[in-house]
Amino acid sequence: MGSAYPDRVRTQRQVVDYALQRRALLAEVHSGRVGVAEVCDASPYLLRAARFHGEPTDRQCPVCRKERLTQVSWIFGDELKHAAGSARKPEEIEQLANVYADFSVYVVEVCRTCSWNHLVLSYVMGTGDAPHSRRSDRRRTAAE
Image (cartoon, rainbow, N blue to C red):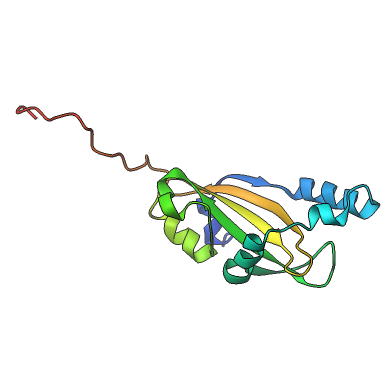
């Protein structure tokens, strides 16, 4: 019997889904209690990341309803060094997960038309091993 989930899900840990928060915010927007300008505020950097690193979805923008949403995955973690804080495609994240012990992934949905953006998912990826430790600075003795 095959798994209902793609292989990628098995390596994700500490998954947090922000669907309820998203739904509550959209209810506030549609009722007029929160202005569209307050939620359609994607930075140029996020919009550029959506264009070059984003994955198209089949979900229509819940605010403007003019375009399908794009998901952008951002990676963070001390072990990633210069790569931390960058947008990556899912294939790249899978490759990094085989090399690094632990890093966080934050998935943001973006509408490139109206600038709606919302965090939809976060999770931890990596081998789960202890991070590669640096050699101790202490001097070795002759007995070692």
